[in-house]
Amino acid sequence: MFFILKAMSIVGKNPRLLLINPWIYDFTAFDLWSKPVGLLYLASYLRSIGYEIDYIDCLDKYQPGLLHNPHLPSPKVKQYGTGHFLRQRVEKPAVFDFVPRYFARYGMPEDIFISELQKLQKPSAVLVTSFMTYWYLGPKRVIEIIRQIFPGVPVILGGVYATLLPEHARQILQPDFVVTGPGEIQIEKLLSDIIPDAPQHSHSPQSLDEFPPPAFDLYHHLDYIIVLTSRGCPYRCTFCATDKISGPYAQRQPEAVVEEIIDQVRRFKVRDVAFYDDALLLNKHQRLIPILQRIIDSGVKVRFHTPNGLHAKFIDQQIATLFRESGFTTIRLSFETSNPERFADMKNKVTPSELQAAVNFLVEAGFPPQQLEAYVLMGLPHQSFDEIYDSINFVHSLGIKIRLASYSPIPGTIDYQRAVQDGLFPADADPLLTNKTIYPLYRTLEAYKKFQEVRHLVRIMNETPLSAKMKDHLNPIQNWS
Image 1 (tube, rainbow, N blue to C red):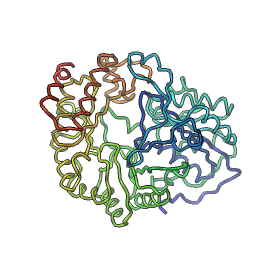
Image 2: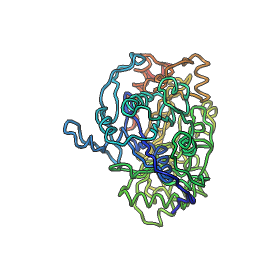
Image 3: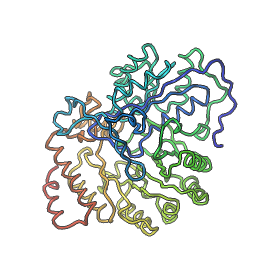
Image 4: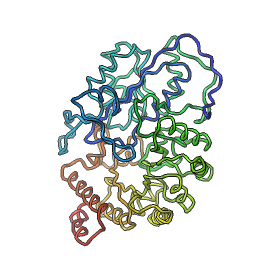
């Protein structure tokens, strides 16, 4: 086994921990191979050193309380395991009054969550994760309910929001402790300080491969699994905060990754595997190429998906062929923009010629162009609609699909600081205003409608070849900036 956690001596009783993945409060949310992989790694690690683990994922479509409730719809799973979360409308926060859409809570109803909590033994501590900064209403509500059901039990908040906005989290959510960055070792030490009978062990993992795999067995049913071949990213894109969230870039050994994939696929009887890496193709000859070659040799039948954009400049004939032979099904390429000044400023971004070369290699390897997608960013600081149009038109000219990604100003990034300095975003903004759905640097109904026109146009372009009529449809968008 690749799990090499060395000899440990567990002392005393086995305290019980409750780990929670909270709801999403937003205008829209979709299960696009969405699992809290960091929390699941933490669950495995803490369990391996002697803790008893209870787990509630508020987004779990297969939670028994949902399946056995005749008043709730059955889970609707789309192709390759993706699907919709249960959606219930809630009151829209006042800062979103200008947005002509309903606001909702995604995940199990509160009464089912409370019922699940009441079935559990009182834990020694509750660990709550967090994701987008504008999703903080989910962990906030979870913590409020935990205080009611388990008064006096320490609550520890970690994850993306907690890492990027720890002071906001302390003031607004008021957990007992906030952990920033990768949490396994930090939380182990914290628990040993606050739990009298905390398990002790003689060795801390020194590499990613010394951690046990994510605890997917905590789920009632799985449609897919998540795999990490590395953690973090060595690049420093101006709009990204991965370095703050994930810590120093670290890679796993190919043999360990392959063993995990084969074991998890067979254990949970799934075919769909999503890579969560931020830099999957980096050092490809030492890491990804050996992984894919071993997967092919093993004969295991899987469908690989890359929801995070792949660095197109690293795709060559060998990689494209291995993608095809190993079962890659969803291929999304990072592009962002065709504007040379902007992609130079972003650092390490992909040029149009590099994207075109990558597409050519993939098509030659046997991928239909419409199976390929490229991310295009819109709503960037000082970005004109001409720039957006040029970018989507270029991607469309390659015959592949355009996947629009709305810009969200992430606290702590260079672009966030620029947006504040340039007066595009309030320095003291409620984190809700970073929500990408509202196009945060614009925040008016007029701008919202203009961006929605772009989205509508892209839907048309993805379905049909570009025509003169569609170009005419673009004119009002091109002239507005």
